[in-house]
Image (tube, rainbow, N blue to C red; front, side, top):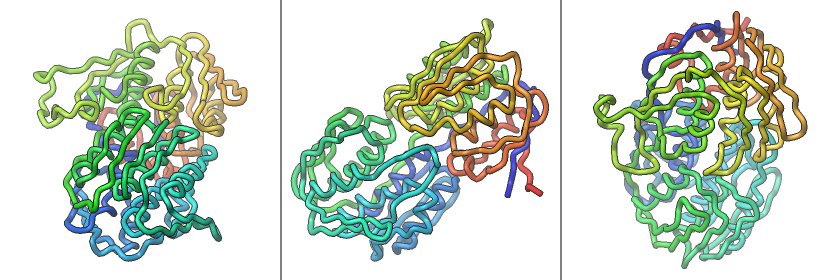
Length: 438
């Protein structure tokens, strides 16, 4: 087992480049299962534990995959096994994303019920209900979702609750269905727009992505395509907080600023200065491709002269403040002047990091899905334990600002969503290292 050791008090400075989005790369890799021939090439794929898991999952089905740096080359024409086993799915909930493509292309699937972070219930009943409305016969036996169908049929599907993975799964199922599928109350996340853009390059007919109503007209087949994964808005937001909490001055390159409006607004209100750089100041022309919502740009982030101020935060589906930035924002607010109220509306069990922050001197009180954060003058380094992916990032951020040494165990959570996190922080001047636990 490994730990991360942080000694606080260093002001971060320099430049950091944001990797491709994990939450976009995973459905894009799953979508390659829809290609009957050719080799799909995905660029800007982050080097993460979850990415390695879904690669192993597809390879177990027969896909041929090679990797060179951030490029994946995936050939799925030889896929013949439609099973996603428990041994892989239990470690990553996003494995459920193979269900829709398998049902669309092969008319069958056997996918284990998913696992992942222990942050609350994330039921898959909406995925199953939607597939049944499209003509699939679904049963759950011995911990597996078992699906059978001929060609799926278009349907008018209204989600009872907005679901990101449900929207992605049924969108992928619908691209090869007979007729028109309409997804209502669909999720609007930028990662869904990214997936729809890739599917269109493969030959799909999709309209309305980025809105609550997505219309998919089924086609006979899809072909392999080349595509670049959008930058990771959560990683970008995490480094914005790192700059602010350390009272540093950091240039963040390849940040998808247009997709981060809620995060940027809140961080600015707390007291961070977030300034997009002009193309003349950003020497990486590649980051200025004209692709709107998904584009990466360079921004300079530092703390304002008035310091950090308390602020209320409420997590919401996109375009609201993302639950994946809740722990990072909480850490920043532990050092803000005044009392903040954080309301978590997405997951019912996403305050487990509070107890670890309390060990570091944070003044936080939890009442159900609400956390009351009273700013303190300083945090104190302490041994802490990560409970999930985003909590682990929050605890490292706390360590950057804390007096003394912070040792965080269960680093494997961090590796699921951040590539070389401690290396990037060290390059910015942080006193941080990864060590083997005794």
